[in-house]
Image (cartoon, rainbow, N blue to C red; front, side):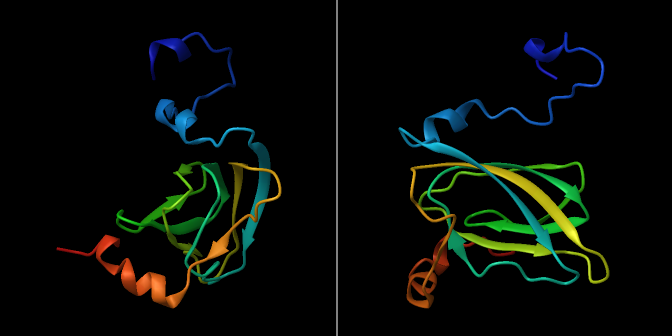
Length: 136
């Protein structure tokens, strides 16, 4: 825990601090808070991108999460997540549990009127294949 968070009242806990993220928020952005519920085994949205950064928290279950250039990882209830948005492709946001629902709450900072997500075409995925994390 950093020094600025050492004197919090009981019951408050800072899950994550991302000082570099403020520079990623588009000028004039609005904050959108969204709850995503994934049914058992749900693969989530196809590869996509968001118009601005996302800060989130898994509230229930487990989410398999993969961003361009990063290895896939499992984020469990109580864990935070961050996505820079913009040009970065979000490959996977799936329920990692075959027999229980998973849920996360995220806040996105995006220009007003922009879509929550834009699906990436098969052609672009092929062009950017070299940017996706691969196991050594």
